[in-house]
Length: 430
Image (cartoon, rainbow, N blue to C red; front, side):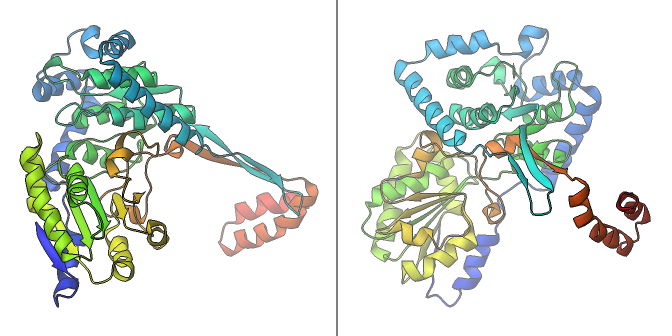
């Protein structure tokens, strides 16, 4: 774990290293993924059979081996504990309500020249959702991806998920039942992203692919962007907690570890103006790690990538540090979080106050937990219904409105050296 202090003469240099550190896939991953995608594009189903046996130890022999049926998902839903069913349903209801409020409105108006202008929003025809099935098997992620697609109006929502040794997570299947998934394929990894993008004999291609995955899945999405739309190229999870000394150090330690336990390359950062509190949090982290079932992962993350930053004045110094880090998750555990939030330009999602841990946002708050990582919050947003929709503009002119704007169009066409453009306008002006 690294400790920084803004009064240190080398702080700017050391902080820049934290900001610029890359914890993502290297070129070796890119090469492997490129080979996998090439093989899937040409080999189709046979390539998926080969990779699924190789990576998941599972044989795709006949149709029953390839799919997880809606009936199986319903069976899993009925088989889990009632408390889990209720929790999943609460999460689904809140996610749906939040995303329904995101639906964009069509525009249709007439301007001062009499020109009719506007835009129509429509869903994509098909969306593919990647659901991890290895170390990370998260029903919450299925809900966070599937429900916005359904709210957007996507008719065909396809799930791909690895099932190592044929095993699937009952909670993931239960979430698929709640979300109404009727096409679920037992394939994973970069090869599954390739199948969704190119199509195979069994799996029809889709228009957009979303969902979390390992470095190979993220790289496959990056390489295939343009062939398909994607939500984002996601890297390791990260959390930035801004906390004063009035907090319970155990709470803040738990918040930091909530991301550290995801992956050894995850990052947890604390900014505080209280050196004594920082020391307590550090001690609490050590104690809590020893009690976690995910201790090995959390310790590797905290030891290698954890950071505590000590400042003199939270209100004056923290906003600039926050904006430079542009973290996936930002907790403001301070007296007046609203004031500081107004100064935040870059963050994936913000959690206001001492009673709003990031973990609530992962499950039941409502906003999407698929968020930009690796400082991409500077230019991108979390998953929303808009990722499953596209906007088509339209224009309608009559003789009067054409006469008002046409001459300028012809002038600009000539200026750009495009005479056919100009002629298509000038003929109508005559």
